[in-house]
Image (tube, rainbow, N blue to C red; front, side, top):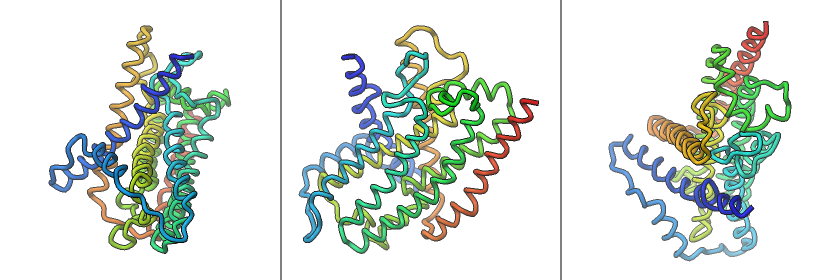
Length: 339
């Protein structure tokens, strides 16, 4: 029990997730800067930013609830941490699966609930400030999140169907999906087509959920003066900013788990040596996560901001139909394989 508590706090627990959030912040800014032919920040700059923000005064606007402006940033980072603890990285459970500390059967549905809660919290964070810029930004954020989470749901069904729904409890478990994805694709190579399509969709959705270029209309610094964040400063802003970076770890880790096999590199990867398996799990998970973050950061250097109506139109008219096509292809390949 004590070992589990220590691991939950250290690796791959809360401290590890926070450090990974800071690392992702640096990596994202570094790749973005290099794409613009700039040097980018030093390695410890994200940590310096958090320390600097916590030392600054956090002002509450007149007539605004101090309670909600305090509770919502805490709830925001707590939600991101909960989602991150669901991601299978390094801990082996009784079934021999790599599982997150908070994972359980049917945890795929709980992950979708966390994603929805993440978007709803952003909405309320801006709404409670009573600032028109913040409320406009939070409304845009909620509209964008709800539009893109539907294609994400369809794309998440692709690996679930590939692994199989015969054992309903296991098939909707993140750890089970990540472990069995490679072996099933090895038996039916046509699944590669649908899994690649679903992966591309998931990266687009990740950019929209994190409000990165070109989906940053909820923040739009030149139009809304930082959007839903405009009234937050000091430690409250630091919590929200860190929650966003932990959210990047959570969503990026979800993509790695569902579409890239999580910490596995093949169907027969375990060495049988506990500590070696743990190190290899962690190493390959981090390599895949870094690749996802680099791709996302590089893409946002290529595309300029799009309006919120264009973002919603993209979600409903382009991304959603492609997600449905990927799902139909998966069903077709499954019928071919079973024939």
